[in-house]
Image (cartoon, rainbow, N blue to C red; front, side):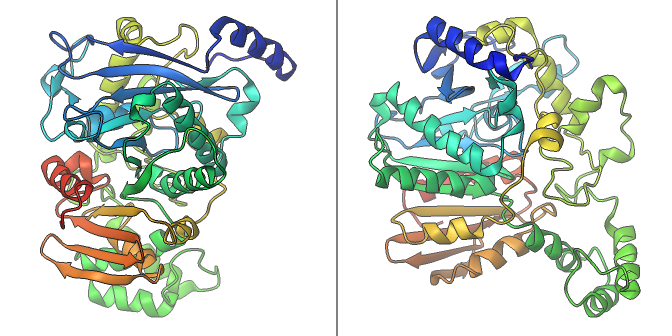
Length: 462
């Protein structure tokens, strides 16, 4: 990252930048991308929005349906420290890398079906600061990023973004969150609710939020992994029952004097330790992939692998580690950065997931987001929560447990599609499990997730 070496120099540098830029945001229309043949068949905009001393970079894909009335979404990817480009190229956007060109000097891009941008306009943001192409003019900002700070900054970001895009002001607005972004999404949503109440302008036409494979509560998620392993046939019933007795259902922060529990947990670890916890049926490539220094960061940075919210920090690298290297190779190409209108000199080396954020400067100041979800049950919004049933990183068991703790009334019970709908006055929550999907579901089951989103956004039952 390029920033002032002295905190005292920040204010002067910031003043100079303000004088040079004049505006609180900049935007560019991108009509072609290196690696893609011809003109892009959709409207792509990139740009920066200034929030305090930070410059947030974003990719905006306008809806290919009716952009003046279709929903507008602000999507926060996981990590923390993973780029919004993951959502655009890997999850719900209209482009993806062509795997047949992975060995090329410049990987190729291809159009993909089932993009959510067919029916919604989406802002894919690089957040927190230090992620992707987002940067700050002051060194201090890199060491104060936190869950609550990031949510506050993104609440300000969307209002400033709308100031420059007033044609979207009346569109129904949703916050989206994936994985660790699932913890931030309800916090961002609360920021918007409170800002609207305080009369901040422009008013945001908030209609709801959605989260996929959402990190929500560390204790619930860690304690759910052993019951999940038993339910999926990964450990024997005898071992599970023994561990349940010896550990009394508490598998995290075990007392060192509880030797029986520790012994049972060690045996469970022998059975599950080599699994790919992002998708239990996929190969765990950490067992075979080399880690040369040159590729270490790319391989370590796969979507929140070793994320802080997994206190044990397993060193699991799935086969999509190759994809990480492709992301880095494409995005560090100067012709790509020129096409994206990246400000020269602001980022020296781009990485899909920035380890210096995830394991270094970021402050994890929200242990559980359940309270934020509870707060939002008193609003007039709708919520979609979905999980992959082969995800052992954030299991469906833990998600279902915290949803139950919201004490909502079941409006539509479990049925085919494995969905459940809850209601409280004008608030509604839909929960779905995506069969065969891992962490995150939109990477594994694109057609199913698109169908789910299309029905939910149009108020049809799943």
